[in-house]
Image (cartoon, rainbow, N blue to C red):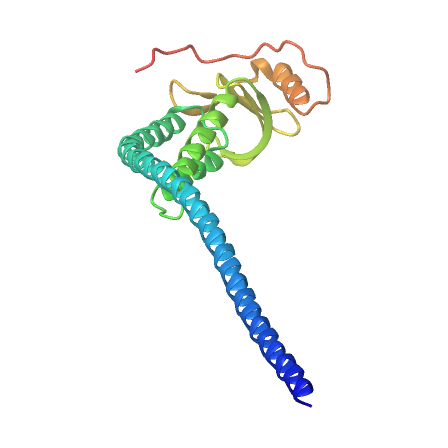
Length: 236
């Protein structure tokens, strides 16, 4: 009985030792897990710090680049202001010159051409039209006027002649050097006398004007026509 009690005591003591050892191992395991978790967090934080360093370096370079771009933009805006101050007077002089050219030219399509000049003046006063668009419109008008010098064109117009008669005529523009009119029945033919700034009757070129009208209307193939023109004058 005494031996059994001793064995039981030994077993109980061993069981308590095992329980204590198990508890100690569990605490050790918990400490190891916590240590491993802290180590993982430390590594993750270091990676994040490295990433932030790279990001900050890139952002710093980008910021410097943006500063340079902003400086270029500011310089460009200053240059644009200078250009604008210079180009507006230039465009106004161009429009004035175009208006004078139309007034002194042979009087073909006068309503259309004077309207074009007036539209340019109106556009110059509009704030919703960019400077580039204004300049494009001015250059477009000049190009149209230049093209008149190398084309032949038919159209109809009502004229009042020096005898006071008013009627519709077939008009023929030959470049910028000649402007002619002819009635439908071809009994009346004339031209614009730019020296005296008036319409004059001139039946000497009746057949040539009729031929020119047929060419301009693409009824016959182009060929040479002989029509009277005003003598060239020296540019002022």
